[in-house]
Image 1 (cartoon, rainbow, N blue to C red):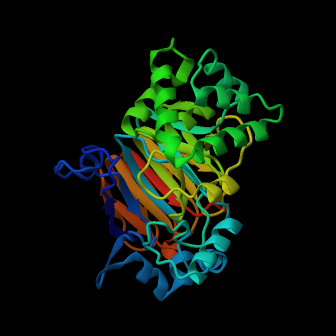
Image 2: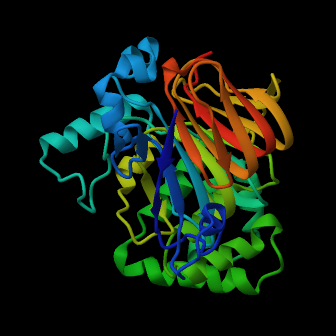
Length: 394
């Protein structure tokens, strides 16, 4: 087992205090949006070894079969396939979607051949991997997630007479739900540059003075105030509004359009940073690429439900790269799952990681550890709240 030092990403939408409070540091007034725990090249963790600190990707590369286990090393080409994060949102994130594995690889290879630098603002694919993700709320968490029925969005537009509202009502009246949603989103993302600000401004002004329109009444006006002229504020009408309570989770597969609005959560995902944005951002928006990736199906809100196993709550999904395990809060006695690589983070309290082979260690709030595949069974004991990310295979 190796204690970890992890990097914080200071994105503009981040909260000022949540991550410093977890880590026991003083807030410095700047947004601290995401704490990354893993081996992704964008912000790799540092593992503290007997011979000194080293980047976690380097530790893994020295002996992937020993550190990751033979099966994981072979299946995922010698890399840690998951990334654990703490996400703290004070303001809405971009409206976005993630590609599937085939699209991610093809897009990455095409941009490599085109010679687009990895850090170029117009780059869509920064690695060749997909990015399904699971989010577990630590406090009340607000999100937009997946398409709702076109009829529901159309009903919210009833009586509006602005040019954009009338056009969107016609799009959403199409009999085929996929066609209706595709037509409405395509319209919003391809508004003519010269008319976009006027069309969206007229829509928002009329929307803001009309009678309350269901769960989306406030959020459309709020997003429009934060991102003037951004079609993502109107596109929010097409999506489900979701409130997660602590302990509730969502699983977001490829193609699911979503935007996290506010709150603190733990995320685990395939180790990728591929994001295609539709709006609510000043970053690059590639409308044709995004429209090819989006899944326009109307589906139930993708809640993820845990199983209970050996003293822990276990979230498994269709993604083979990861699973998330929650131990506590409260008095705990449980075993970490399996013998594969594991990243463990203490959210509250103090727990002992008791190893059957070798030395154990103590984790307190905000501390984390990387458990190699060859570490043997690890028992968690104490009083606290712990999350652990593992490979998703049983």
